[in-house]
Every structure is written in structure tokens, then in C-alpha cells.
Amino acid sequence: MDNREILLLADQLQATKEAKAEVDKRSKELGAKIEEIDRALSDAMAEVELDNFTHSGHTFYLKSRLFASPASGKKDALMEALKENGFGSLVVETVNSNTLSSFIKEQMAENDDEIPEWLKENVNTFEKVSIGIRKK
Image (cartoon, rainbow, N blue to C red; front, top):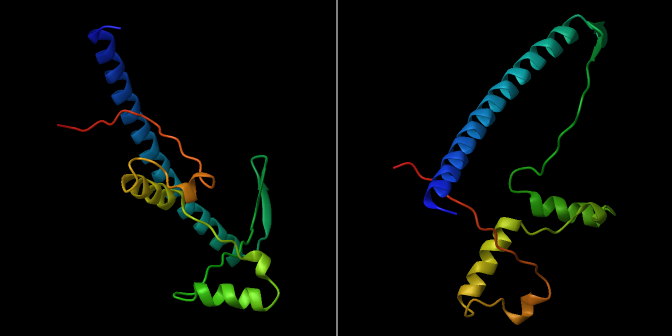
């Protein structure tokens, strides 16, 4: 492969990343517009006490979904309350994958680029090589 082919691939990669960024931006804009229209339509339907209707071959209906999260500063108390009241199966310990990756990097840096023995059997690692692009 010669330099010309490498430069062509670099141009293609940059153009494709820029196109994806535009699509992502447009997707976010459309998502915000969808939320705005959804809110307006659901408010209008609730105002006239309309649960559903059919229009242009589609049925539109009100749906409700509850979202819950621990109160501010109460995550540990919530976990303990769930356990104490027989709902411990809802409590799941996790390690964020980005945090774990950073921790493993630190451990390897302190251990001659090797994963410490006490971790080796309990963690899988792989490296992904990719191309970074910066504007001048």
C-alpha cells in the first residue's frame, strides 16, 4: 500500500466521521422535536379526555410509564431497606466498565505492564487500536 492509498483512506475516514456527527446532531434535534410534539399531543388528549384515536391508519393512545431512582444521597439507605424487607434480589452490585478499565490500566502501570495475579483470573481485557483525528 502506498502513501496515496493511505491518504485516501484518511480522507474517507474523516469524511465518514463528519457525516456521522451530522447524523447524530440531526438525530438529537429530531428526538427533541418528537418529545415536544408528544408532550403537546398527550396534553391535548388528556384535556379532552381522549384515551386513544385512529388517524391515517395508525392508533394513537396515551400510555404511562413510571420511572424511579434513589432519592438524593439515599442510594445506600434504599439498598439496605430493600434487603431488610425481603427484596434484596433487586439489589445488584456492579462495576462501571470504564472505571474498571481505568483501574486495570493503573494496576498494570504499577506492575510492569502486567495484570496483578489476584486480578488475572477475574478480568478479561482487550485493546482496540483506532485512528484519532484532530483539527489543526
